[in-house]
Amino acid sequence: MAINSFKAGESISAGDAVALNSAGLLVKANALEFDTASVVGVAIDAGSAGSLIRVNADAIYDGGSGYTPGQYRYLSAFASGVNVDYAAWASGLALTAYDGAYLSIVGRALTTTKLEVETSRPLFVTNPTSVILLESSAGLILDAMLQEDGSTIDLETA
Image (cartoon, rainbow, N blue to C red; front, top):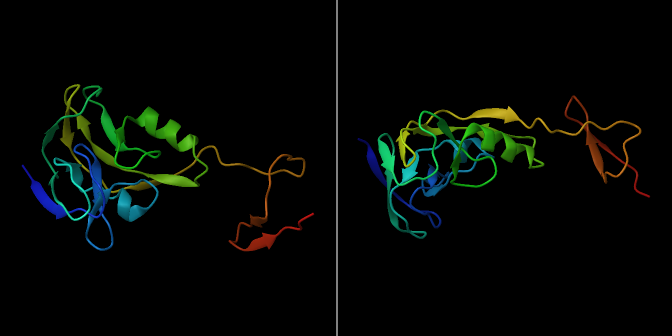
């Protein structure tokens, strides 16, 4: 069993999937950036910024709810610190305007309340609901377009 303690960089709740920021402080994991999508475990304790928080890094976490035994749980693409099943992860990403998010395993559900913490390296997944603009597209307000080579074209404003 691997239990580690870290100083919190923000308010953390028990059960939050957590990561370390660039200053080495514990924060709620977030699927939008590689560093914060690199989950170090699940918070055992709750606390505010500056508190010492114990983190379950590689053992059974008992305190969740609504898990389906055998299913992997992923860091939500929609809400920081939350772990969800894959269907919720994919639908959460589709509800955002982000280009994509990191798919990061938090663990596998053993029972409806227990999670075997098994973190993984985050994998970037492109948002499947990206918009393709056509000459006939209407209703979108744009100030610039990004070309395939990464350069930007400024658009005329009326």
